[in-house]
Amino acid sequence: MRLTVTMVLAMMVIVASANWLVQYPINNWLTWGALTYPVSYFITDLTNRFKGPVMARKVVWFGFALAVVVSAFLAGPRIALASGTAFLVSQMLDIKVFDRLRRRAWWQPPLFSSVVGSAVDTALFFALAFYATGMPWVTLAIGDYGVKLVIAMLMLAPWWFALRARAGGPSVD
Image (cartoon, rainbow, N blue to C red; front, side):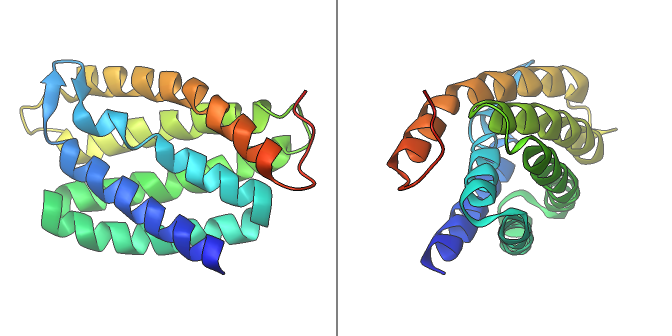
C-alpha cells in the first residue's frame, strides 16, 4: 500500500508540474514541461513491473484525478483537460504495451512502452491544449517528443538499478 500511495503522489507531482511548466517555452521547439513529464512513464512502468497492470492502472487513475485538479489551478482548465485526456490514453496504452513485452529483455518493456505512449500523449496533448492559440504547437510537439525519447533512454539507468535492487527481480545481465 505504501508503494502505491508513493507512486500516486509521485505521478500527481510529475504531471501537475509538467502541466504548469508546459506553458513556458524554452525556444520554438521545447517547453520546460518536456523535461519532467516523461518520468511519469517510469512511475507507471515500475508499478507495472512490481505490482502488475491492475495496480498500474489504479496508480494512473488516482494520479490522473489528483493531477487534473491541481493542474486546473496551476495551468488552467484547457491544459488540465488536454493533459488529462492525453495522460489517460497514453498511460493505459503504455501499461498494455509494457505488459505484452513483460517477458522480453529487461530494457525492452519500459523503452518501447514509453516510446509508444509518448507519441500518443504528445499528439493528443499539444493538439488539444494549443490548437488555435498562437503557440507554435506543432514544433513544440516535435521537440517535446524528441526530449521524451531521450529521457526514456536515460531512464533505463535507474530502471536497471531498480530491478537489481528488487529482491528476486529479473536478471538484467
